[in-house]
Image (cartoon, one colour):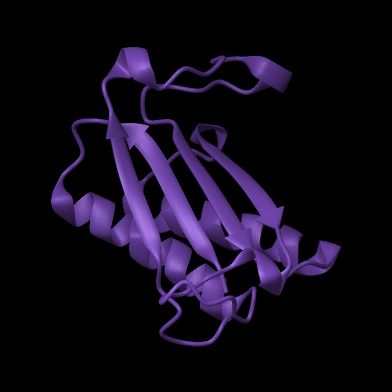
Length: 124
């Protein structure tokens, strides 16, 4: 059951943000194999001074179009799925939104089912 957080600088259109969320969702369902409908995504926009990142860490050339994607999940916890997800996101963001691959950072966090409550204070 994935939960995604997407952080970016303010200034992108609502259509851009919706497409960004759609791409992440499609990767979660299509690549990580979460069930369709498991759509829990938060898009956070920040003033540039509140999204702090090194523009050249590890040899990348990041611009103000930098996007940070974090997915917390119980599915897709094998190396092949993770790598396929990274590639899918980078390819789709470049193709559909023109996001440069250097501007995409993805972080995966894997947790146990007992780490979730979907409502009523009940564990999953």
